[in-house]
Image (tube, rainbow, N blue to C red; front, side, top):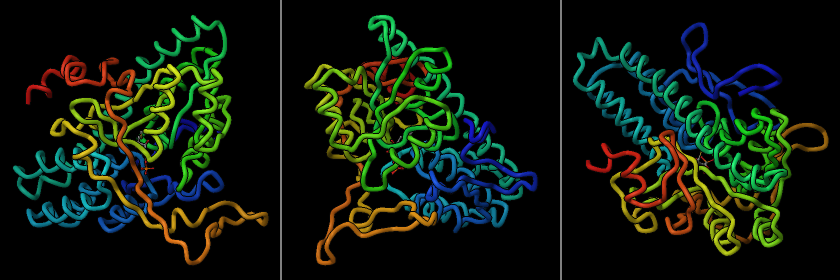
Length: 363
Ligand SMILES: CSC[C@@H](O)[C@@H](O)C(=O)COP(=O)(O)O
């Protein structure tokens, strides 16, 4: 998507072949581009959330393997790289998906051929993510179009966290239908949950939408239920870090509460995802998906721009107060109206997913 009119992806290779990313820790106030020269830099970038969002974590890991193969293409290096990158963040299944893709391709090859093959596949994984998100956006657009026609007016969409282009290679998941609706001339307006503790909504989603001229309003995380009770939300669209084969949806902490409020108020609750986000091995999201626990500091402190212009962090709780920081929660399939994928929209159920992905459901 665009920054100041110039097209960007979130990860790319520069003229010298080096991988570069947008370092998202400084948005919306500063656009910083960072090269990732070696495996350690890739691991840090994922763990410390210079890049984040399930599809982008996967794409970054794929490039991490490719760069490491240029330094050392041995079997031992391939094994160690899978492990080092896999342990960076536990919840988004796209990370394991991408590492498994690279492993499956590279392991049978002679080491001398691995670097070139890895580079090619990492670039393909990025392109595939862009195309899947473009396609799922077209399917989600049909839902927005239908609401707009029925309502004969502005469509109000609530979203949580950042499932925008910054969370993917391009387009975003939850935002792809929104961008495509706006392009088509539909009057869309987005309620952006701030998404404590790291405020991906306030810092990233709001920035993206502002850059593309999409009308939006930032709301505190607790406002969604109230807005729904007063008929101000026509639909919810969120992304996901891992969706099970039975349609349970794991996403940023607080998503479950939005799904409950949507259910109670008859507001459609959609989840947009490219298929690498489906974990076909799991059936019970609540029991089986590992939930990342992040540092308490993300809860006790908040980052923002000081009046003097520099980015700073302030403490909001007493010194003696500790915190818990589960980063994701699971929304049971029964609360999900539909899963918007690159192959179409399906029910959040084993049957719904199997109908769209018969080759995977059989496995
Ligand atoms: C298209 S992104 C879907 C999810 O990855 C997104 O909603 C989310 O929860 C991101 O969490 P983050 O902790 O910022 O990586």
